[in-house]
Length: 90
Length: 211
Image (tube, rainbow over all chains, first blue to last red):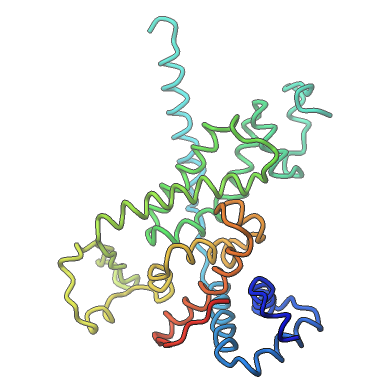
């Protein structure tokens, strides 16, 4: 099992899965066994999980109520500029 | 029915809100502005949430979101359905954010957030040379700890962590947006999350592990 995890790509996948709680039973057991002999790796994975949770719980930034209105005005100005510059008499 | 054969006059009968983002983009390319408006509705909050992590300022963030949508509007014909619409749009947004971030770094200023409970207080920017190297001064700054940690996170880690954990994009989509191999994306996400947590706790671990 341990030799299987010497492939860093596989290990990275397993840690991603562990952090995101989406490992199947077999992979979960493989990784938690591996953690026993690699305490620093376990610390790293736990830190990673903590960082993810902080972001997931972070407050959400949303658009202002008049965002669409302001965007529509900018688009209208741009269209107007375009039609002026494409005017045959100019 | 192919879009090319669809008469614009039938657009009122189209149930735009039930279409995928990619379908909406094709309708927009065919001249239906309503489809663009719906894409704006779908993505305006997500883009604000994404770009705020780069600007740390609501006005700058709104400007960048508007600029992103304007570029989508202007460049509608450069979108090809081989890519997901969100991947294409996030690539535009990320490039804008990166160039804005570099511009800001050159300015070397730090934003002092206003105290929300003080109606007379206002956000301000200080030149870096005005900041004293005094920890207690930094502690007094009303900065959100998470924003501060995100700012400190290296750019390589920050972009993938934000795309994954705030925007909740799939790994393959993040790989396309950042133009990185999938393995690098996964590794950077792990390391970025870990570094973020370290920054938040203000601990420094002497050992580093590359996963």
